[in-house]
Length: 393
Image (cartoon, rainbow, N blue to C red; front, top):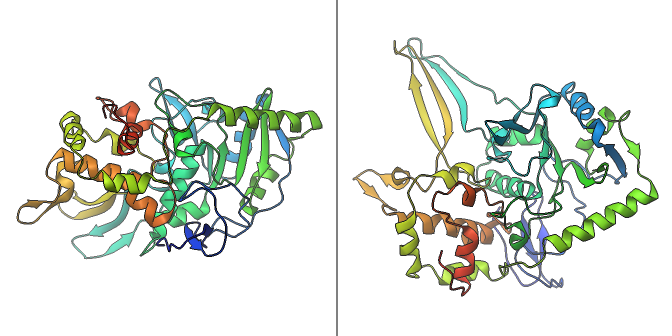
């Protein structure tokens, strides 16, 4: 869905992206907006229902996951080789809800790094579509990843909708956990305005002895029913503690370093700035940034045959605009043959083009790319430089 723009306030479309409505006051800008309850039906998301405050005690978290496993697969943060990753869990005890941040986001649950599509029998000419495996519960998403999920939704519904992604997405139930502080020194969600949960079926807010649970949609009813014997009614004191936690969260994420309203225009104005060349010289062309980014959508189609050349499988695999071969065409020609052009293209997709098109940030400030980059290239530094900063990028 393209962004239809006029003076005024962004209005939600049926798919959850923005259009602009006349004669409605709006005080901030493109995607920095006063938060309000979304009273609409997002495709596949279910009708919002009245929130009921419940408490999930820390001692009952494992039991809560076990209850979900009875109803379907659960993807959640787990520990793997001294890192946290987001993947399907086999045992509830594998859950690491306290994980500061996973190396990869939850994107892979709905958009796998390798997704087999079709299998061919080359001898007979027969073929069969391989149905997508659909995860049921995504447990433990951070706020920035809920924003990334919305950006991904907008892209996958635009033009010709991506049926495989949407089938998985509509089947999944999102259980998000509110962050009360930055995950690490590389995170800059406060500057991107993505530190609050954007939308989820179930919201968990950490408290001293557990989590305040809010059920947001019809899809959350399955979770509410599964947890019926586990949850406790929130007391007045716990409701008060929740407000204190939220107030402290706002303080923790204050001091934004980017003017989000001006960012798309500033990125456009700096497109030919000489400092892009300096950044291109630093980039190692390794592609780590696109591998961990929660909003990167690019993929390649790969055909693989067996040794006897009797069977073949076509799969979709993650690709990325930072690779030299990505923009190669017949000729041979390459539209972005040097690293400067590639990194400028990537940063403008995150900070300008897709923001204008869909009205949601395509850089959510998670900082995964900064952590993964061997030379420490940061979108935050790029955005600040585009807005007149003098620090090296």
